[in-house]
Structures are given as C-alpha cells and as structure tokens.
Length: 562
Image (tube, rainbow, N blue to C red; front, top):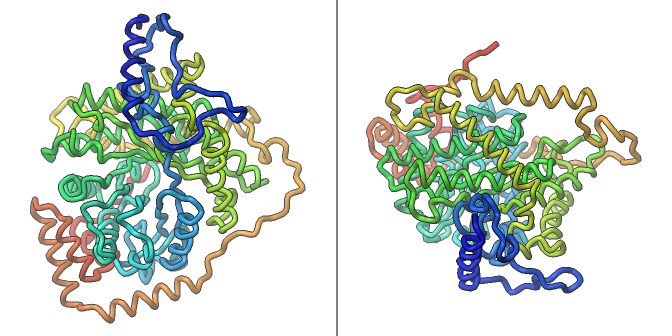
C-alpha cells in the first residue's frame, strides 16, 4: 500500500474516531505521558500489504471492530459461574455483579447439559456438581431473582438442550415483567462443536439443526439484540487442538450456520450479527493474539466475498474469550493465577469483546468465593492499572505478530478447503461447508486430527521439550493443599424434593397438552419456538421436553472407531 492510501485510511479512521463516544478516563501512561489512540506507519511512508492490517473499525477488522478500541468501551467482564441449586448460584451472581462484573454467564450441571431432570436415574450423583441444576422455568426464576434480566446481558453455555433452556429464560423474563423483545445476551447452541469435541448432544445432527434454524428465525424476528448462537472454539482447543485448528474448525462451524440461515431464506445482513464466537486463550501469548486478529480478518472476508454480506455489522466477528482451563495445573495451583493473567492479557491485546478468567482452583473443583474474586480482580487489574485500554491493537505492525497472524490465517484456509472437499461435489442441502462438516463428523475426521495434535503435544511434554512449571520442571514447592468448594449431597436431595413438589402442584393435563402440541409442530415445517414456550409456561420440565423429542427423533450414538 502506498503512502497516499495509508494517509487516506488514517483520515477515515480519524473521522470515525472523532465522531465516536469515548469513555471519561485517563488515557496517559503511568508517568503521565500522552499516547495516541492508535499507531500506524510513519507519515509519508509506504507499507506493502498494509491493506491486510488496516485501521481499527474498518475492513478487514484485523485491528478491531471499533475505531476507538477500548477507549470507547472496555471488554465486558463476564465471569462463568454456576453450582449447586439456583439459589446458591443466584448469590454468586449477585457477588460478581456487586464486585464489578459486567454480565452473567451461566454454567449448568451435567444433567441439565444432557437434557435430564434432577430426578432422572441417570442424574444420580451429578446434580449441581459442575454447574447449576435447572429443571424448569421455576428454577430459572430463582436463578435470576433480584437481577433485572432486561438490564444485564446473560450468556448461557449449553448446546444440546439449548432451545428449551432458552425458552425457560424467556419465561423467567416474562414473569419479571421484562419486555422480552429487548433482551440481550448469548446462547451457545453450537451443536457442531459437540460432535467435534465436547460430546454433549441429544439427537442426530439434522434435528438439532432444525431447532437451531427455528431459533435463528425467532430471534431475528422477535428479539433482535439477542445472539442465538455462540460458535465455540473453546472446547475444541480444550480437547487438544492446535491454535490454527481451533480457529479453522470454529470459523467453519460459523460458516455452516451462515449457510443454515441462508437455506431458511433469512437475510445474511439481518441474522449474521446474531452470531458470536467463543474462543480459548491459551498460554502461548503471541500465538493467541495472532489467532484472534486472524479470526476477525477471515470472517469479514468470507462473509463479504462468499456469503454476500454487505452491512458492516454482518462482517463483524464478535467474540468472548475464556482463559485456558487445560493450562491449569493441580500441582502448585497458585501458579495458575499467573497463567490466567497472561492468557487474559493475550485476549485483551487480541481485542476480545468479553472475557472470563478462570480461578486458580478450577482444575480441582468449582471455584470458592475467594478464588472467584481473585479471578475477577485479575481482569480489573488489567483494565484499571496496566494501560492496555489506551491504544487500539498496540501490537499491530509488529513483524512477529503480523507474520504469525498471516501464518495462522494461511493454515486455517488450508483446513477450510479440506472440509469443503469432504462434502463432495454434488448438491448441498444446506451448503458446501455444512456438508463437509457433517461428513467430517460422521467419518471422525475432526476428532482424529484433534487426537493427533493432543498426542504430539503430550509426547513433547513427556520428553521435556515443552515445559509446565510444577509438572515437569521446577517441581519443588512449599505450598500447602488448597481448601476447595465441595457440593453437598443434600443439594441433590433438596433439588429432587422441590421438583417433586412443583410437579404435584401443576396442571398435568395442561402440561401434557402443551408437550403433545410441541411434538405435533415438530412434524410440520412450522417454527417450534412458540409451541415450546407454551410447554415451558405450563411448567413442563427440561427432561419432559427433551424426552418427548428423543422419543420423536431418536438418540445419537457416536460410531465406534478403532
């Protein structure tokens, strides 16, 4: 790019920056030195390839979505939390919000993630242990008691039974008297990554995609600010993928959901802004920053050039980041505070829109109040003390970071081409990327490549080529054992008791009629969300809704592979 083009770009950025709202904050260094809101090539110089880097707030968004960077608004502090019953988790949410958290993120227990009620025999011993137990809309009311759902953004990390859980959230908001059409938040809903990495599915892919398509239509029409899909790379990375695999598999899944929306006749400029992303931030600092920058650039180019998006917001890749759970160690767990801080800083320098920082004890148990507060304060120290909010994309133009960004992007493009090849050359019911993803799931292509990457890394650890402090080097310590959070068995007994009371107090005929009506709708081309909402309003439980759908659609079982 020549000097005149670079100067014109800077002028465009300056005009947008001047017109944008900025926070009332001190944007000087600790010593009082004034810094510019963005930096670029020296005036009057050319920079070959600068069009791939650009300026914050304009295509290809390598340097961020907004001309102001974090001077306009900081990332949302969204701490992932959930344990025990709804009342216990409600108290944790109020602590997080009272301590400066900017949004909520719900962790559900395993029975809820699998669409099972707390009194289901398969739920025995699991209720409330890895998240909060939610059996019905009544639990959702307790979960958000005293929290204005119309005034706080809420993220829910659940995919298999995401749609009925979302309906429970809507009904809880209705019962608060909220204007449901104004709700803002994110539902994970990403079923592709379940087949690829996390394994929390209910049905075959096709019924899940039917529900997701219905949800996309419903939100675009009724709740335009709500994001019905958070395409997740986090679990792919935690399963052992490389950074480039995490990026490529996640964006490919995102392209699949774009194809799903288009196959429903939806306008990409309307529904694409409702797609958000969820990435891991691992401990290799510069690799993670490059990954986030490449992600924005790839998404913008594909949405424009492949899927025909023309609106700016449709080209934006907005993402939440969580620090790497897999990087936490049970040995010398206090070191995890350092790891988490480094990972959080990488997410911030990569331009994350919201962030969760893991607690030091999460490799052992759910976090205690004290460790959760340390995790929250880690973000606040970065935000308030380090000056990282002063300059947009401060590493932009670094020879290393730009080369690494280009390299990760190139690897991702190679993977996209391979996925599309998996789908074959014939007609595609939803789209070519979707066909490739479904074939890759069926053949074990994704899981095989992730397993290979995990094996290679594990070998490097065991040979000492890769180091983890406290695990294969610097293993001596004077640290004492941690006091960890333990979930009492009484939580499960009480949850089952309350559930039995609620079932006995409801109108069984109304529940059965509403669930039967939902199944009737499932046999047509009609959108299922309204019928499912009616079942939830009648106090049908999550297990009852999911069991009815399992009876209709069957259960997916992963093929055995050797």
